[in-house]
Image 1: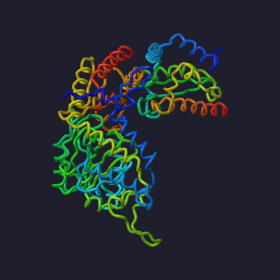
Image 2: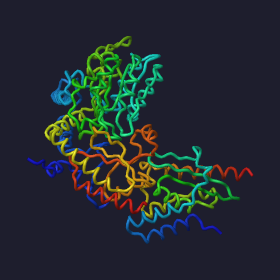
Image 3: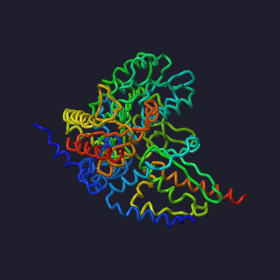
Image 4: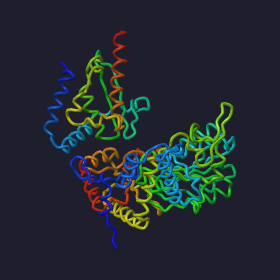
Length: 406
Length: 144
């Protein structure tokens, strides 16, 4: 049976809105995806009928909120295929997840002579926390090369991964290039050298069937808002033994067992890393987003997004002077491009006027832009609700913009 | 005698009223951008760079007797078009008038969004920098 895109689109109310009197074409999904009605309704229902603080109250509402919050943790455990809900820490998002691990390791594990291995294609949020961790601990930040087609230089990875490497932190899917990295192989090689591994899954969560046990990473981080869920919620998965080694990230309520003015003992996993009242609504909304992804099915998601990627490349290839950034064999539904003689910001401005939302600029990957010697790119990134008609709209709009700008 | 800032702003608003469609307006802006006299290469340095997240702007200012002369450039042509308008309004004006200019014309010609801080195209910082130059050069005038 063919997939009913019209029906799926009808679940996303925002897709009906107009931008400058034109139908919205939303191609900025790698920055943040739109939300299906069921996620919006879950948030509404929670605040309308179920809200209270979690883990403390004796009263009925607190029990309901706690049950729903912890059920959401279980949904996320299944989503990532982790062993235990103890290993599912709710965070603000990927950035907080990386900061939590980087800060923890800088205090517990890293020291003079140690190395932190990242890659040239990392998002700023997987660079800066490690720079700070390196400064704090005396460790050294080592950067693995990216090849011209946007894939990871595995020869360079082999060379730079040594006994000194204490942590390898790499992106699963590059937000700028779309490259899907061989994370399982990366983790296996890292483990052989005794290094911990963190995989930045911000871009992969909406596209790939993630199995943290199969990848065998120590940490995996995701953001809710890029996978059809709310903003301000994400998950840090960590193997219990890896999480246990880390000191708490923030301190306060919820993360403690006993407090006296002399000494505090910390709560167990996952609560040790969830100081303060958590984003309860966000967690419930995120669990609903997972249900949306699962009911849509990865098979449909792959087929649709692969189709859009191929069509998008075909449609844009006809423009003289077009250059694609990121043409690796394994690639997610992200098209980053430039047209000779046109600044990406100018192109993005005209596309916006034509109702098409794309991202322009360096995509929070400045070192990668510097490597390729460009100020930025135009990036169209697709989600499961996008269509081939929308790609035609993009093609027509680019055509018009090129005529205006050249 | 140079026109006042208000007179030039009005002239630009009148000029843009010939372009009711956004597309014509942007085409005009792009033309202005392409024709903007370039900044002297010796000023295209880090010191004169105003970094935006999206596009970059270079700006230089000099006193010519008691008036300021601005030159600027950008790597993006729409940004350049708006710079061309700013320079048209503020060039050859006295520092005190530049400091007090509210530049409401940008809103009137329907390009306000480009001066919103969320655009991060360097234009907001450029306007701020033009005014800072004016304050600095005003102080210099008073010293002499």
